[in-house]
Image (cartoon, rainbow, N blue to C red; front, side, top):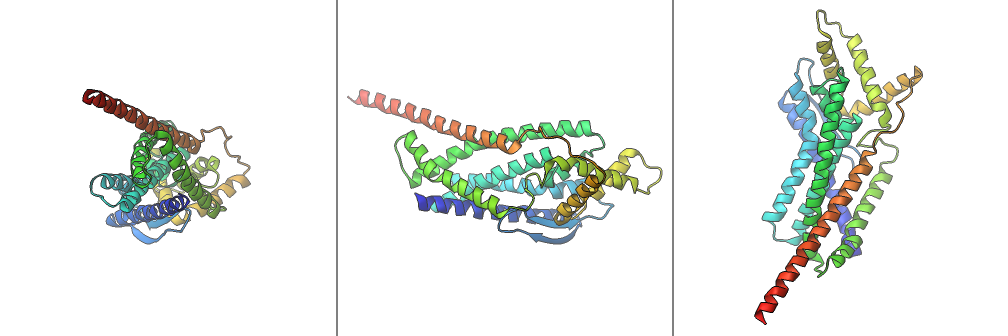
Length: 326
């Protein structure tokens, strides 16, 4: 089982890297279709990747939104597609395992990236949202953000239940057991160490770099964003323009910065704020990653209990059939 756990950890890493490569390539594909200038792509072994592109100032909101949103959407759709294929067209257990791991890793990663990015005003999700609803009206933006985060977190709970049931079915092909307790022990000796190993290596390899879910220090994300947008509005030389139009132009310019340059620009903006004596907002926000981890645990536990109830019903049916035969 130790060897299987190691293989599982390698599969998680491989499938996530493939998913990230598709994620970043989709940015370039969609933005290129809308005439963006393409600068390149980066997919490191660990940590955050990016696809660099920029639009001309005259490009509207929809191309910008689609080019940003397609990244996490591609991982979610890819994960769902892999899961569907694993149920319908696969006969070899190695390929079935690969597709299930690909589906689980990329579906959960894509959903979590979307939820964390919206909640922390960071990355593709945070940028895509303000393209459609600029932060010049913060109350409307906050309401939409919380609504989307709750919906995505609910999707993480449901997905965890479905994914756990699918993985347990695949696990049975490798380690057939008769009881729910035995299935749990197998998962504890294979899937759990694989996930823990992958997360540990991923975190250690990414030390010193921004977290791809929320950046370096999420307390600064909104102040730095608003400061940059306000500076761009002040520099806007257009005459006869409404405040809403000026805000939209500033947001378009802010979002148009190269993805690969965002962290450097963000860091310099934070340094400017600190030099002016600005302090970040106090902590107290919901630890979203911990909430998601709890939802994943609840979903997986519910899947295991459902398996137990199903097996109990099957045992009762077999007993009734046996009594009738007697």
